[in-house]
Image 1 (cartoon, helix red, strand yellow):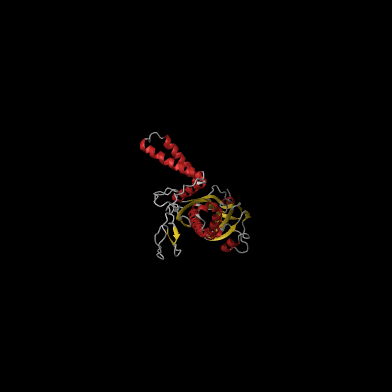
Image 2: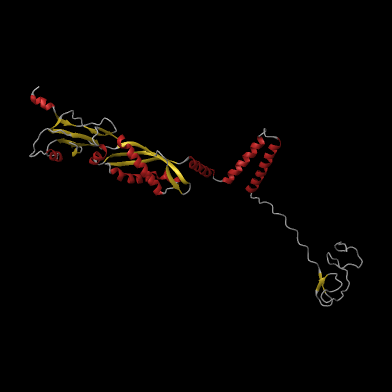
Length: 355
């Protein structure tokens, strides 16, 4: 091997990286102690970005494409290296490949219940879960704020931060939307859009962006779910009056068929069911309860006659007028029907009243 071949073996002429995992966000190109040759071929695939770092300082960033490295397309590194007049020489620099694709099917969930004030149920606790996707939107910001100088960086390094930011944004969305607990399931998409708008400004400070956010389920406390089930059952039953009649009829049938509960207990059940059944049948056929017996009629007013002297009304059979004191003519009149009777008669010949 000649001297030229030995020197050439210490230079890198092709720089590229293929992602072998689905979670790698940043991969540091392994220089293996070699230097990059001026004129080397750099290949950056779609959903990638190549970043050159010189002595800890961020230099040039290359998007997807094929490049021949030279001082003309590496202006920042050229300035850092103080290459004047286009001097081409091998150089040593760290090269990082950043994965800019979307990281899909990332799961999120509330580790602790989210408190919510509902107009119908009061204070309730909610749990929620779903999926989201994100990507690196600003390579420079991401390297400065998150990555640092690691040789490998995966989604595990930012997943916890994103999840907690999402849960915080969703809590604000539920509280500010004031959507009733019974209507949350119909507003998952609206809550997702609101959460994305609230979370993305915070993630932008890390060079990340939330591409999609899906709320799969928001679960209510067991007590609230039972209350909702009862309301659903009432809606399914429809006419509760007809349902109560049906239940009473079934109870009477079971009481009649229950031989084990004989004796006075069975008789009492049968009598109670029979009374309830009779009342239901009366209501079903439109029968109204019997009206209470009328109060006895008031006794008729005592019969009166005109005074023979002054004409004032005086009780029939009075011997003297209470107004003028005049003696009245004696006449025998039946006190029951007012018919004239023979003096000395013991019974009225018209109505039989005892005189």
